[in-house]
Length: 87
Image (tube, rainbow, N blue to C red; front, side, top):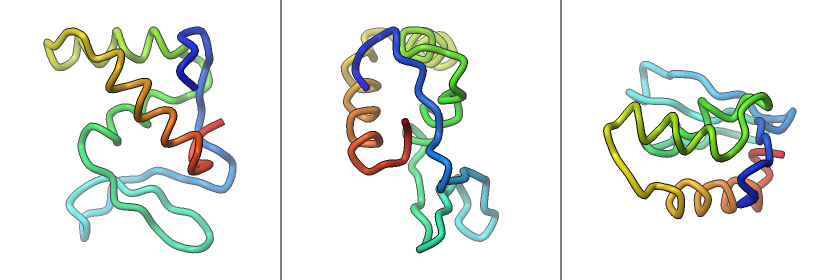
């Protein structure tokens, strides 16, 4: 999912939501739950199937007043793709 024009979205079996008990976002699926750190949740929140990877990177950089996040974001998206979280 490192191609900058790809438009990632959560896979059908997964749902992301804020869990008060976990004090953060989690990724729910039929067999369980994955607790997400802040970086992962910020990236996945933007994986809506509408924005491409470049737009996600730009939005995160602007939101957090940061630069040079392309490698971090695309690296996470590769892992999320391998785990089946996004398509």
